Image 1 (tube, rainbow, N blue to C red):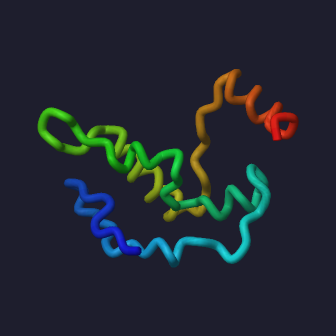
Image 2: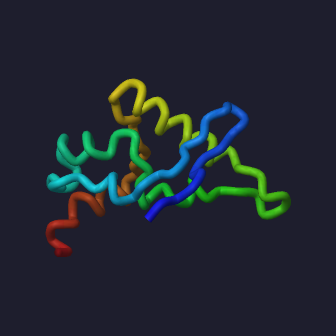
Length: 102
């Protein structure tokens, strides 16, 4: 499956012909491990797809969230480092209690 032009901004950056079949790693490390985080660097993830698709309902122009996510992905690719993510108390509780829920 190929998605054509996921991002396009005034920055002159375009991601074209993104092949979803080329993105799957051979093996997936356990969630939240260093290996898992390393494989996610510079990749569009399902939890952030809303930012990829963020456009104004009024005029269809990209929202700031879309531009911010593109900048984050580009920074991760250039530096090889993942960007810190937000986690509130409820999210931390969910991570801590997840093994019990499964």
